[in-house]
Image 1 (cartoon, rainbow, N blue to C red):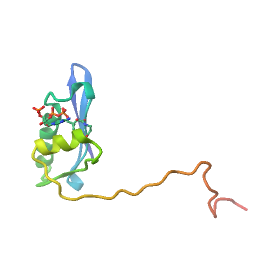
Image 2 (image 1 turned 30 degrees about the horizontal axis):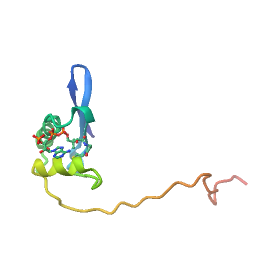
Image 3 (image 1 turned 60 degrees about the horizontal axis):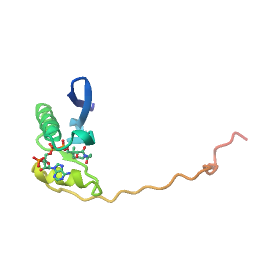
Image 4 (image 1 turned 45 degrees about the vertical axis):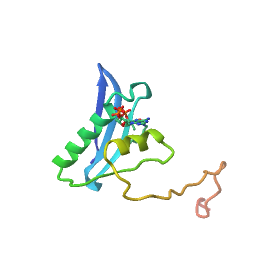
Length: 106
Ligand SMILES: CC(C)(COP(=O)(O)OP(=O)(O)OC[C@H]1O[C@@H](n2cnc3c(N)ncnc32)[C@H](O)[C@@H]1OP(=O)(O)O)[C@@H](O)C(=O)NCCC(=O)NCCS
């Protein structure tokens, strides 16, 4: 099961991290733009690592989109290293959707 942790400014949620210990992964890490460069991302990463360790993970991965310069700079500054580079496939969903072959009851 995923675990979600927030960073708060008073009652306002200003950052969040999601871990999935079953796949040794940090699945989401984000800080609101106006709160960045104040150490919140680092604190969330530390929390995530502590929680992963408690759940007996001895390593973890985090996906960072290479378009996100903040993410890259943050990863380098916090001691993460590139362990794999991925190609992501996708497509535009046609509108209208094409009729599927077995889609009618006739
Ligand atoms: C990446 C992200 C979570 C960092 O959060 P943050 O609260 O700004 O991070 P911190 O303040 O703890 O930064 C720690 C260090 O990382 C480096 N760093 C972070 N953002 C940086 C940037 N935009 N440019 C250069 N260095 C940066 C700095 O060395 C910084 O230390 P410093 O401010 O004392 O110089 C935030 O920019 C974000 O939400 N980005 C969009 C989502 C994203 O990329 N997520 C993937 C992250 S793994």
